[in-house]
Length: 591
Image (cartoon, rainbow, N blue to C red):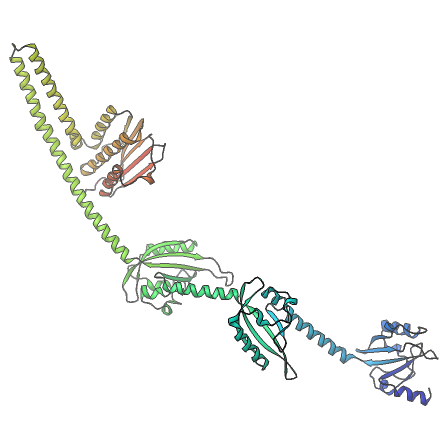
């Protein structure tokens, strides 16, 4: 190529090659020679390319006429560097074609980094779990992510070009304005506000403004809004719960579940009521264990029951004696429930509610004392009543009965001696004698009803048999009497009297209320206890609905309590009734 052509090639801007149809370099300018791709005149440029790029190059060089615009440019890789080839659309007269070559490795790397950073920015913006927006210098929204749409309820098109402050509640707009101005001065700033969404619902958002700085100049502001509605509600609930806990008079203690063996589970929470109840400050209790409240009078059996329930994860309620900080004991009612394993911590806990029931216990003790006094009085009255019954029965039987018998005999003798009495008068005297017989029998009956002599003479079983025979004789039901077949009856004295009175009361109830056709009475002795059972096939009743007016059952129960016995009442409507009492054979009223 002539010097003029050489000058013309060198005069062209950029690195320029003139390639023949076979890919050889016919000519190149100085800029092309300085490239690091081994470009030398009279060498094969095609040999520097890989197979795919070589095919692309040869296809373009062999093309006749003008190349389509879209085929005039393509990229090749030479020695790990990237070059862009731009072909002249037309060939030279000799079939060669000019190609401009540019090393774009740094440009491409920079472009990729820019694209990567742009993609990273877009991901940070679009995929951010918080509401992120970009504001211009006037505070208008120019870009928002989907979380902003979710928080506000408005679409991006509805939000763009509007001020963020337009959806902020009026009382919070001044704070929003101050923080935005701080961001314009290059200082990040944040505030909490209420945002009213498209459904007119309010959300609580924590907003942070961050300046967008380009070449030391603020060109915009990023806004990040975190939806704090649920966390604020939770915090408010926690504050309310804490306020309630501090005012509750009971003690609330939460402990870990392990170890149950000494030193015991650690206390992780306690309310302020612990100081009112025990004198310990909450900080003295936290990290300690519940054994700190125990002392000499704390019942070990109760503690073992508590432990057994806790080992099986069951709720438990017990009453124990605990001790204050100053060593004063008090009655403590404790209810402990297991708290299931927390998902966020994987731990489980025990929650205990403790209540000082010392005053209640003292009142109960006074009430029990009063009940014992009343019961002793009732016992004394019962003893006096039985003695009076015995005396009256004896007087009726021995004195009045004998007097009536003597009068009857005297009258009979007088009638026999007056042989000349008219028949009419004799009949009247005979009737009088019959009335004396009836009176004597009535006196005996009254005496027996007051207190059967055989109860003292022959014992409970004989008296019970006599009484039941009389009941069967005058009532419409059958009576089956089954005494203890084991042998001699041991019950005697006051216990025998109590059992007999209970039997009388049971049979009175059967007569008045049961409408039974069959009554079964059993008595047996075993293990120092005398057991009386009365059952019938009557109409029955609901034991849970028996009121205070049922004096029969109340009287029976009171007699049983006097002797520290037990009583069982089983009944249902239409299924009859069974009453069973157990009395210790050796107990007296004053025991």
